[in-house]
Length: 151
Image (cartoon, rainbow, N blue to C red; front, side, top):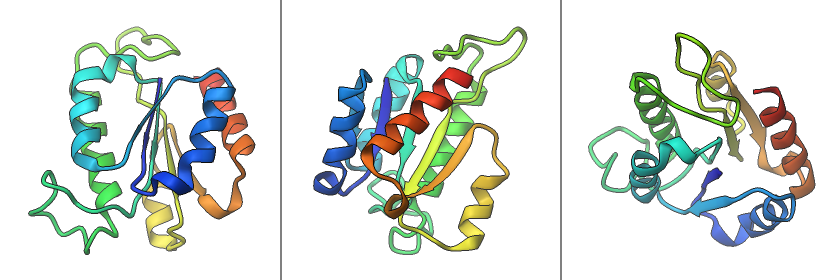
């Protein structure tokens, strides 16, 4: 399953539909609170996370400095990665490597073009930074296929 988190439901509908036409089960959530709850209850079913960066902070990050939502996705990314790596067993489509936890593949799918923000994710394993304006729906589906086949 692909967990797709973005507050722009209408703009992302064509991407979601293309992924479903490509055979993927997609859970689309438009706020960080429901995304976190869903992740906590379903982490073992999630093969890949697609995450926007600019979203309202919700209740979960109301006390954090999200810069009025500009960094909300960064906080959610960190929280999910912390939870995933703290789990003794996390099974994803690529299987569990012996003696360790496989990191959840994450696509940062955003309009943010700040080089410093890109650099945050460039250093992370199993993390891809894709600028929304540079990718058509079928291209995102192809990238996901490539990622999941190599995981």
